[in-house]
Amino acid sequence: MPLPYGYTIAAAQYSAIRGDVRANLDTHMRMAEIAASAGVDFLVFPELSVTGYELDLADSLQTTADDPAFMPLHTFASQHDMRVMVGVPLKAASGKPYLGSLILGGAAPIPYHKVHVHDSEAPYFQPDNKLGLIEHKGAKLGLAICADLNHASHAARAAVHGADLYAASALISESGYAREAKMLEGYAREHQMAVLLANYATQSGSYIPPGGSAIWAPGGAQVALIDDTREAIVTATYTEAGWSSEIMGLDS
Image 1: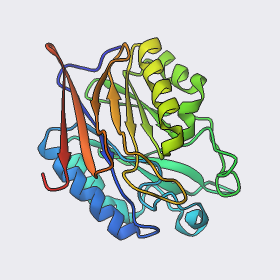
Image 2 (image 1 turned 90 degrees about the vertical axis):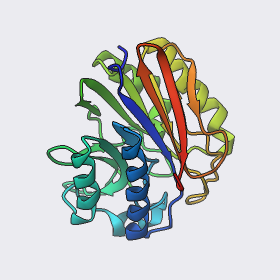
Image 3 (image 1 turned 45 degrees about the horizontal axis):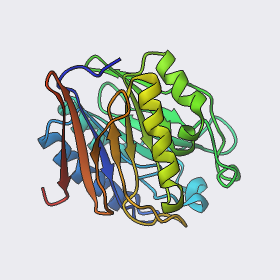
């Protein structure tokens, strides 16, 4: 299904400071303000954006959806009727935390937990199996975190449940980018839904990304791309005339 006319999606290509939640959330807010000024409806940050992709810090930095640290960004998103997807370790009822995302804005933050945890992540995180799908302004938004996108069944499940968009919050390295971008293009083509990738701009943990945050239209055509490693926001809007896109740096 296509997104509603005029609905604007955006990927935040972003750099995290290891373990510095306050500073990282300050950058999230700055990027959300830029996005709101451009009329963005759904803004997606990379995997574990709040802490950085720092697996050894997962236990000490795990938190909950009602953590007051998220309230300024949640309130801002609500005021602008925007949804913002951020990445963070989330406490579980028992055992290891989830490698999670929070969707901020609206009545209350909504958690999503990574389904397909890498072998390297398994010592630090546990997987979940719940569908990630939210509705906003008539759009059905399917949620994914990094390795989720490597499993075709994950995107297919979102499509079966009516997703208009498959949004991947990720940290993809230079060596894996071409393969995984091709997979995302394939999901857009096969399932006739828009697909979004939010990748890191610079190294986090041991991974060095190429940037490359991007958006594909239903059918597989790439309609937006940051083709370098700057920190920026890339947007795409579906209109009656087709797709339009924009790239905004942090000085916008």
